[in-house]
Length: 342
Image (cartoon, rainbow, N blue to C red; front, side, top):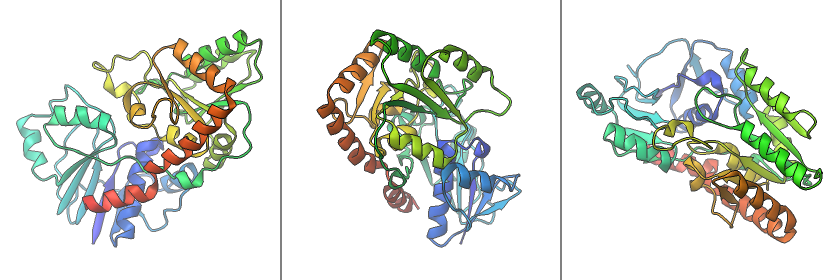
């Protein structure tokens, strides 16, 4: 049996790319010869380094075949509906789309050949089903929670997310300003803020601005850390902040919110208590007051953080619950649901 995997964004090495490569691995484990369609063969080493995985059984081929002569094709959509030609075709959406002409006659004809539409969250599902007139299946992203372990905690507030303003609003700038207020209000607290994530090569203006805002404060920026380095900082962080989606009108620009939140789950698996903006996929992960907090404005972010840091018993209790709840999104769950789809 043969399977084809296509992701037009593979070189961004983001959460969606981890999703697609894990799907490829599941297909391989189920007896398929898997071709990952990508023009640059060096992408394999980059994927292994970024995600801490081995993908020796996957073939990387310099062609884009829409499923001809394949038993299965798993295709990540950029908003368009391709003409897929495999025996079984699965179309995957990682983000909401709106006003994309999803219900056009041509798209409806192409969807006839699609065996299933897969999305990464209930948040994404609401928009995709409405736009394309489909009944998509939610399969949450696979998070390698077993690879994350808490170590002795330090006074670190952490955020992990891409340094980019092109698509999603990760809003590291909001976190910096909030931390500066927290730092000043508590008489120079002995906490530090760490912002880690990948960046677009050659596009450093945004990071330069963040560095300028961070001057004279205990704020560290880790650009393009390895998987090993990420695990280490996760393990020592006490709290995980996220402002992804803050200031965005969800009804008008749903694509700019966090569609799920893999880094948030990784932090939970590492025992860091999440305090995240109440929007997008965050609401499907955090149970407020139980395993973390959701916030709508800066006051709520700072008050939730202050209250948590003051109450060591609450911090310990929520840290333990966060670790437990992170298991809802583990690799085995993904495998079961993906195999059921097949």
